[in-house]
Image 1 (cartoon, helix red, strand yellow):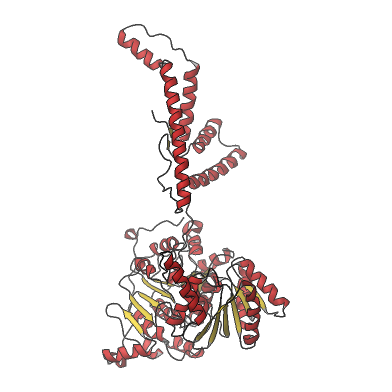
Image 2: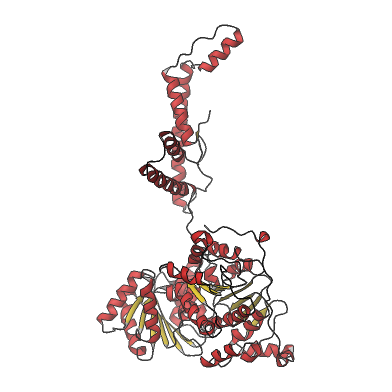
Length: 607
């Protein structure tokens, strides 16, 4: 429902992007020294024209005293690898793609330049929208970024608003109406807020700094239309930064739609598990998983918090019940079926240590940062590589050690065994021999069938639900009917209007022509047996139709064709004889009724 903005008709005030002043120490660094320093910083790879050199200390960023004091207060001693290279690039006003392992400080890498960017601009006036927008794929990540941003925003007298679905919109609207320089949001709720009250709640006219956090998930095909709606409503000369731990190759083209000559910063490798995580994989049957889970919790429960990842909401609830029966009382589930307030409460308790074990679906796989989280257990094996990297990345953050265990079923998960082996190898570890052997057997079996096994699938490839023409029309008619009923109850609409509106609802927009297919969609299902059966049935139907048509034609030849009144009148005029009075036969009445019905149904018979 969000209308597109015609930027050529809008006046945008000029703004400054480049705030970076290179210090003398950085300027003196030679190309070989820069290369050596980037190697030292987890093998940073930088692509892009005139990318700035990496910094060594916070003082070289050009931050003000208040921001330096906050960094000191929260013990951020020196920039991490991604921060050292990304902050000067963003401060220079460049669009940036930042890819770094989980727990490497990506949030701070886009927050610090954002505050410097906002402080340079005029204060918000009545009716102004935000200056910076941070889009996140999940509610939990949006809340976490909001809390991180508030650490710096309060000392700088800036306001942060957080808008996400699952909770009431009224409080979020109130926050936005009061004015906020920064909005952290999920895409769907942001569109709701922008469209609410005819666009009077907030607007994107002042936005000059846009962040897409967990960018690969954001550009998942289900999210892309929503993202592009928001992006297209922001001025074209904005500064845009994208950050993620994984970035599948096919996502890059989509990301570049919203970027202008970006600097691409890759720390380590794309989609690599952090080296501080000790990875383990166990091949076990479904009935053995719970016993193995209890064994691992017995080993690590006293050392810190744990997350157990499962595929389904029902299973999460079931495992929580099982753990409580065995004496683990500080356990809670986390999934999309739980009320948002309860989800927020569970995460808060998990971070403070009140809850020691969280049983979650992949809703907790991204962005969740818990200081004392030591163990991640993939109770259900993830179904693609990127999900594995993000799940495992909940532990081993900010230089701390962590442990990850993945349960793999001996059947039907052979391909994922290969993906896990790949995760071990890219992190510089040797995969378990039994897991490697399992994948090799699978490859041989596939090769025998003439099929090639390719690792590194497309990851998140969901597609948003799309109405077909019939469903869209039915939905529109349902809304029309509701309005019509309300009008009749209120005593409005005379009989003629009512008949006309009902007629318009009955008349379909889809045109059906006899003898032609209803749609141009391919009829193949991809299954040879199903397709063969379908072809056989179509052939039988065609044969029956041909036989029926021949019978109809024969009967039409025997009986004389009845002339219409218009044809009879035309003949009389041509001959110069008197026009006979019109006699309406039963066949004519039937034909007239048929024509009316065909008109309503948009049906065109082939003559």
